[in-house]
Amino acid sequence: MLTRTVLRSRAPNLNRLLHSSSRISRQLFDPSTVERVSEDVDVCIVGAGPAGLSTAIRLKQLEHKLGKELRVVVLEKGAEVGSHTLSGAVIEPRALDELLPDWALRDDHPLTQSATSSHMRFLTKSLSIPIPHPPQMSNQGNYIVSLSRFTAWLGNIAEEMGVEVYPGFAGAGVVYTDDGSVAGVRTNEVGLDRLGCMKESFEPGMEFRARVTLIAEGAHGSIAKELIQKFDLRRNSDPQTYGIGLKEVWRVDPAQYRPGEVVHTMGWPLDFRTYGGGWVYHMADGLVSLGLVIGLDYANPYLSPYKEFQRMKHHPYFAELLSGNSTRIAYGGRSLNEGGLQSVPQLHFPGGALVGCSAGFVNVAKIKGTHNAMKSGMLAAEAAAAALSQEPSSGPADMSRYETAVKNSWVWSDLNEVRNLRESFHTPLGIWGGIMYSGVDSLLLKGRTPWTFRNRARLTDAQHTQPAYRFLPINYPPPQPPLSTDLLTSLTLTGTNHAEDQPVHLRVRKDGNENTALRKLHVQRNLSEYAGLLQRACPAGVYEYVEDETAADGWNGHKLVINSQNCIHCKLCDIKVPTQDITWTVPEGGGGPKYTIT
Image (cartoon, rainbow, N blue to C red):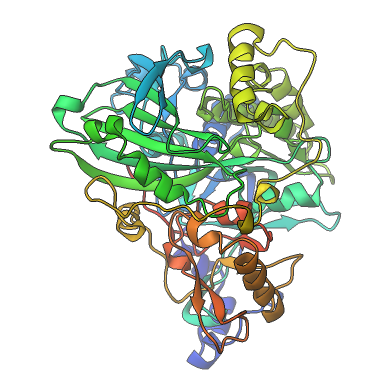
């Protein structure tokens, strides 16, 4: 296993160059002059989530068929496997059954609470009305889990099988060959100060050069974003659309605990123009997962996902659930794919492929994606093993058979059946028409239609945002502990931490440019047209537009402040900002939230 100490010992000349004096260590870092340590591997996987780890495990299972050992490396930006993983989550075990048929015999498995019932409720401001749920939302045979714990468990299995898993090593960039194909990835530099100068602790990122590179970063990852653009992987698909999911975990009063109960809600607190809904999952050990998902195609820039979630808990249904001796123990947020089948890009590129939520396999009707993500990883592993079984050639690995395998698998049929449900809300039918169409399609048609709704205007979630003058500000009630709290109080429950003196990983950048004029234009447009959307939309309090009459990059007496140390890596800013000039990049490896029960 590699460590940064080992890497230093492998590059003594570089070590002397970079650490010979404090004067040199504070020079501005120039990536074009650095000598990087390089490791050759068979397969490099970026992201130790369910998709990436399923890929790695399946590769190790296939070693005996290849007749040789494979060097499989998994890079994970979180400090520990699972620390950046968040979901509801109710898992459909179909892929797990295929990957690890004997998983239930393992004493340490985390699938200890089966789903015992499924309900759906329509909420008004004061009422909770039971309504039928679509058949796709049935949870018979499923399990309520902490996806963070589930991922950590998969990570242990992968390591037992010989996979090299490196938490704290963020995949920061792509390594290309001279012909433009993908040859691997580069990890992030460590030890740069806020100005990009080298501190005494500086260590350059290293390259992992791989015959096959698989990207499993989750929704809207930075490397997947780069590859999709470079290779035009969306040329035949719709733009991806997203939701923001905010979650809390409570230890509830025993009188309110109903192990295995699954409840989904729609309606209040969201208005009829906003897509979204809530959930309540009664986990094992007296814990309850509850949260709210809001489609990021919402129009009103005054909407605050965090405050909508907080006021939802004051509904009588939630207030009763969280009454008595109940304690909140976790909070978090994450963007999720909602585009469905129409938004799945081309999955392969020269030298590798997109896996899991990097491609976008969430079944929105089921409100599940882990099963599809894991299965896609297994199929990618099989295609990679086939590519590795061939004699190395001068050209990049061909992963096109992976795309064929996905389209012939139950992943594709799972998404095809529900392909029109979410997209129906973007048709002239509107929200209410979308609800009615979804009911008919899910109950009767089951996707057996000659039509497929498409986003022919190719509108992104950012483009759905309308100017603030069309709306009135939303008057949210103040926090009322213990049911609701201010944002920074919730943020403390995430364990989020970034080194203060490092480059800001949230960049005001457009078309590769970063300058004072662009930052000033960002402030002008986002304040004058969208009432400073980001300072309400971000669920971690990262963005503020503060008064400053002297700022060269300000406008009308205001400037943008980015509190990057608060970032929980949800990617909302990169997706939703109307000016599309915020770019999320990876911070130093290990920075970010420290989820354990989400």
